Amino acid sequence: GPVCAVLDLRMPEISGLELQKQLVDEGVDIPLFFLSAHGDIPAAVNAMQLGAADFLQKPFKPQDFLDAVNKVMRIARERYVHRVQQATWQQRIGKLSAREIEILEAMKDGLTSKEIARLHGISPKTVDVHRANVLRKMDVGTTAELQRLIGRQEAIAPGRNRQG
Image (cartoon, rainbow, N blue to C red; front, side, top):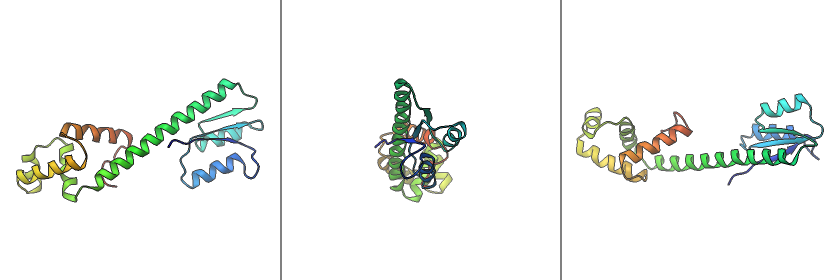
């Protein structure tokens, strides 16, 4: 599920900036923000450059803290939904054969069965079988639904609508 972190510059065993850098280096994508009574502009800039969503100087107003928590939780939810959508897309695409991926690409471009058949040197009836398989494996009922699904996928991951 969604996850986020609140860090301090000074923590018992490792600084918040060191922990943030470790997370970044390990590819852990957690939205976070900093709280610190010992913060300075270079530390805040460093944290933000590494991807922190916010940096609050102690003492802070309770509303500022709540706003920062809400901001990172919104980011965490968005990233979680994105990961789930990516996994679902990859699972569906993974079910397709190489030929079905070719048919999917042609369907995405709005080609008819006859046009696809000419393009790939196969019969329109064979294309229709592949089209039906694509729709079933992609868990949609119509080509229009498939195109909407592809559009949503391209909106969240431009250029990554194929297996890789």
